[in-house]
Picture 1 (tube, rainbow, N blue to C red):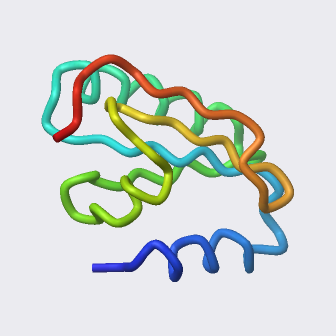
Picture 2 (cartoon, rainbow, N blue to C red):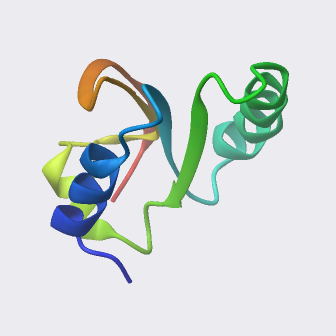
Length: 93
């Protein structure tokens, strides 16, 4: 299991990649439905941005650090900073 600090540091240390979409997911229907669509978009982007998928149940400190109350939750990093986020409706507890 990777801690929040390590994950954040890993994202910040990637100097080649300017854009990264972090998806926090779990077992819910919206998570399962959104997953293949994001994977398809990432594939079509041909390396311009990277999709990082993390099960919210595995890294709860990350959920707390990003104040996630609903899943799936998406965070767009650009130049090592969060520039946009979207939290969906399924309550995460």
